[in-house]
Image (cartoon, helix red, strand yellow):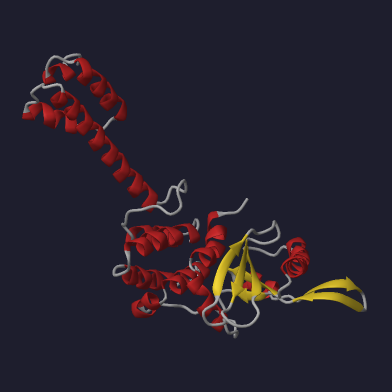
Length: 288
């Protein structure tokens, strides 16, 4: 099963393709200008596949895999999948492996050979991103210039001692960002940092509303759902009062305040049912 931090490390490339340009520079490669990025359906061998189509010249595929430990069996699947992508789409294919620890990153560089003693049929050389080559971003201005790279850097250096400085820089950069970016990166980092002390640090730094990753139990989601529930309760309470007034029943201020103070959905449903038949506003609470 894919872990939360595992998913975050490759999903960011799908959601924020602007990350590709600085990443390619880190790897010593050049991303073609004005290149369109399309997310393709991945296979079990890799986490993400992107088709990169420049405005001029041939395009290529970028298969992205996140590794948290060595897995020789998985590595043999990479060779097969690259060959499959090359044959299926008739364009070159590259493999990018993202690692959050140095030992796994060193292993992932390969090369991974297919053949027998004395003869190599295929040789796979992955591109690798890890703590040794992903830059540490501790300057808020630098983080603000490319939020995707700053977030990816923080996730990649998730076990570094100076991570708090990186998180503070990103949080400061987000303080002036668009609301959608704030919500997205707030949640992405919380997921990407996994079960680490840095996750709690990030939760304390961020207090914004909106959820891009529902069902994950993040702080952003909890805050969003709490606000959503309050909004729904307020709407139900207003519906109770509208029904009474539509029936010509006078609603004293004290009753209106009592209705709007109710937050339990079941109780509000009961009040709405009573509002349909009650002879007076006070009868809403007579049964109590």
